[in-house]
Amino acid sequence: MLKEFKEFALKGNVVDMAVGIIVGGAFGSIVNTLVSEVMMPPLGLLTGGVDFSNLYVVMKEGVEPGPYAALANARAAGAVTLNYGLFLNALVSFTIMAFSVFILVKAINRLRQKADAAPAPPSKKTCPYCLTLVPQQASRCPACTSELPGAADPGARVAAK
Image 1 (cartoon, one colour):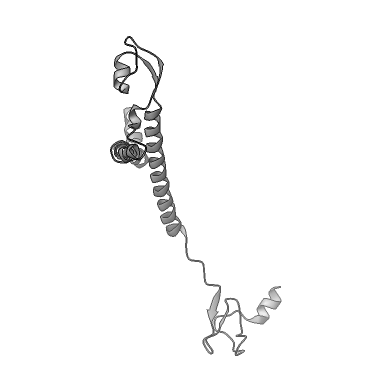
Image 2 (tube, rainbow, N blue to C red; image 1 turned 30 degrees about the horizontal axis):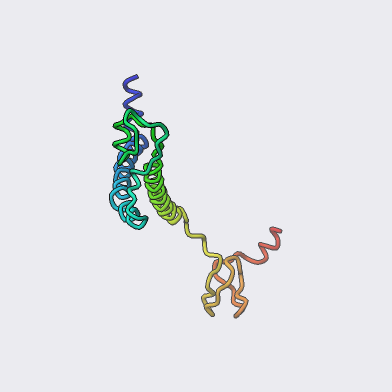
């Protein structure tokens, strides 16, 4: 059983997934910091100095009656609050994260398509006498009527039909 677990845990897919989860977690914290510390303060200034993390509605006052100066004060007083400002921060974080993942997946898919796309066999060849492009199966050039080398005997094609 230990051997089976070791084989499972050390498979390439599991290790790749673990690395992805760790990097994703680190990326998530970077995006959250970007939103809360870089994007939301200027947005708050544009909206009249509003601190989005302190936007809330008191649903039930706590031990001390309100109004509360900040969400931390309301929580300390034991008030029940609806924290829509924190939700807005999370929504912006999610949008940035989802867009970043979308761009990453799109780039990876584009690279995969380029790698998977094998070149199609040529559908035309060049007549060695007049350099006209002719269909690959042609036995004679339509421009100079020369017999093309490597073409099947036209009589053999008729007999085969």
